[in-house]
Each structure stands twice: as structure tokens, then as C-alpha cells.
Image (cartoon, rainbow, N blue to C red; front, side):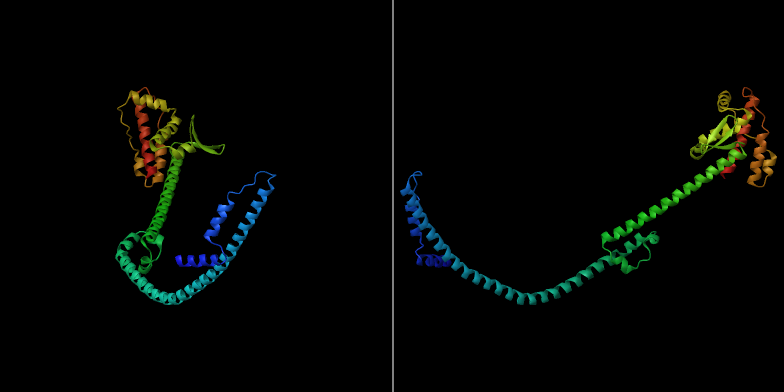
Length: 314
């Protein structure tokens, strides 16, 4: 740095551009001042001084620019040489690096293979029960996955399995509900003796002054359904649910039992039994709820109804 600065200073000095000259310019010209618009002499002194400074500045720029051109040429030569040397050396370096990389890659592949070989039994265990959702897969294919990828395979298969199971449950529940609704409809026809009408697109079963909608048939829980079914069944005898409740309050300890008709026991098919139950219910006289005999008649009828309902559910 010091050497190059000395060369630059020397070149400038040859053209009388020196620190001393610059210092003299500052000393002589910085104090100059034009004292108003009418100071012609002051204006001329400032103008002449400025021209002298301009000439020194332009000369310095010209000298430095010439010196800079030489420096730029040298710089370009250095850059060109650098690229040439680097290219030749890098050719050899990259050749050697490729060999190192190849060996390192082989070592890493062996390490990964051994690691995944140890994990293979555990991975095969996780597949059990998921074969349908993963498909045929070999040991080599299993070992191609890293831990994250393998977990994704398992989780995806498990999700598909759960979705299938839920679909089967939903279908089974729907089928069970369909069968339950069909059984309830059949019981309303064959046991309760109800009639069906469709009003405003809604199916409704009627008997006497009592009715039950299709929505109730489809949604009522068994305990509530049994009460509603008892309402429908006893409606033909003129027995209302309030009468049933009142009688149960009067005779809370009366057991609900039935004397099974021999014809029912002799029936060989469920259809025949249901028919005999219906006939037996038809023969039940209208009970007087304020008497012991009336309560016995009602409880006997309800027992027949309960037996018939249990038969339908089998």
C-alpha cells in the first residue's frame, strides 16, 4: 500500500500537483470573498482563483485516471490468471472429491440398510391387520422408507381401516334400525291391529283415538316404545294409558303374568304363534279398571302383548 502510494504521489508531483501546492491554494483562496454585487475587483479575484483550482483539479484527475487504467489492466490479468489456475486445480480436486463422495454414499447406504434391517420385524408387525389397505409389499419395499415415510404409510392405512369399520358399523346400525322398524310396523299390524294412513307424506298408524307416527316408530327407545305400543294395543278395548297408570297405582303389586293358550304352545312356527297371540288378544274382554278382575284382565293382556313383542325381536 505504501509503495503504490509513493508511486502515485511521484506521478502527481511531476505535474506540480503536490500537497504543498494544495496547501498554498487553500491558504491564498479560501479567505477570498466578494463584497456585494458592485465588488468587481473581488469578483475577478474569486473567478481567477477558481479557474486556477479547476486547472489543478483537471490535471490531477487526468494523471490519476491514466494510473488507474494501468492498475485495472493489471487487476484483470490477476483475475484471468486466478481463473486459469483454479480451473486446472479444481479439475483434479473434483475428481478426487467424487471418489470420496461415492465411498461415503456407499457407507451411508450400508448404515441405513443395516438400521432398517433391524427395524424390519417391528415394521412387519405393524402391518398385521392392515394388509388390505397397504397391499402386497416386499421386505425390500418396506426398507426403502425412512421412519417418517413409514409412519405415514401406517397412519394412512389405519385411517382407511377405521373408515371401513365405521362404514360397516353405520351400515349394520342402519340395517338393525330397518329391521327394528319393520318389526314394530309388523307388530302394529298383526298384534295391535292398527291401521296405517299417509297424510302429508307422513306414515301414521291409528287405532281408536290413539295414533303413532313413523318418526316415533323409528326413534323411540324400547322402554318408551313399549308404553306407546301398549297404548295402541289397548285402545281397541277402550283402555287408555291414564287408566293403565291409575290401575297400577291402585294395584302396584299385581304381577303381570299370562296363562299361555295351549294353541300358542302347539304352534310350530313364529308366524303361527303370532297369529294365536293376536287371536288371544282379540278374545280379551274390556276390563273394568276399578275391580280386581279388571286389573287381572289388563295384566293378562299386557303379558300376552309382551310375549308377542319378545317373539318379534328374536
